[in-house]
Image 1 (cartoon, helix red, strand yellow):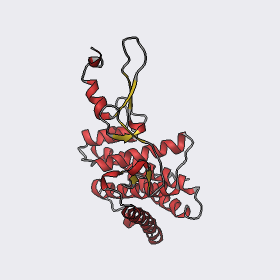
Image 2 (cartoon, rainbow, N blue to C red):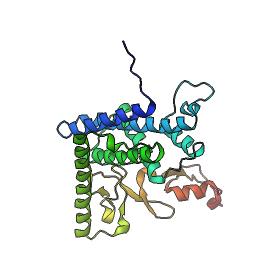
Image 3 (tube, rainbow, N blue to C red):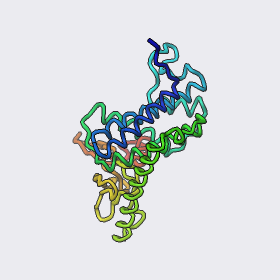
Image 4 (cartoon, rainbow, N blue to C red):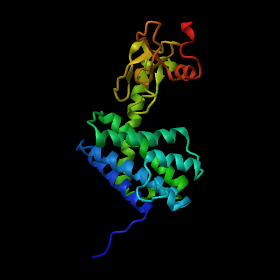
Amino acid sequence: MPNLKMTLLENSISFFLESVSKAIQAESDEDKWKFAILLLVQAIETSLKERLRRTNEIFVYSNIDKPKHTVDLGLAIERLEKISKVNLKQPDVKCIRTASELRNQIVHFEFDLSIEQIKSNFVSLVGFYTSFCRDHLDSDIVSQLPPKLHSELLNLDSYIEELENRASERMVAEEIPDGEVWECPACKKYTFVIHDGTDTCYLCGHSEPVVECEQCQALEFEENLEQVDFGNMKGWENYKALCKDCFSKLENENLYEECY
């Protein structure tokens, strides 16, 4: 019986093609979205490994002294930038980290994502994957899609564009200032409205509290604030929620300076 053998790039492309196929099926069977995302993340991870392999095959392994387990997405990013000298733009790094977070959420935890969030992330990750393969692996992935799948993929993209347009129209109608529209942590689109305490994404519906830093009063997502215990002379707890900038400044200052 013949062996099934694929290169890293061929394996990556096969994951991608199957991912798109699952996404198309998900239009009538929403459960398929889980598999579409997982397969796409696998395609991305394998493509990063292929780029590392082109630098040196040993860099595909997490421990180069004991080459057994391959790198995860985080280590792949680090080695691509430091060793392979691949200049990843910040949005690209964010896409890779999003891919990792989505896979972990789906595989290791209970997950609750709206279909709009999943579609938005899927389209963004497809954009990153096809660009990475073109720019760093000299491979035009889109041209390898069967015509029907390519057409259906464009329809998914159009769907997200439609949602973005609708969100934009709503923000204009409600006269939302540009400075009060943030990137949504769920769908990664700039449609998260903080105006008048709305704290909701107009594209995917994700809601998340936005609060003030207790030091500088800058607005920040509550989950991004650092809880710091300043304490007092009696040893009582005195927690304050600080933004990352204030927390960073605090690390370089005397924590108890204001107590004297």
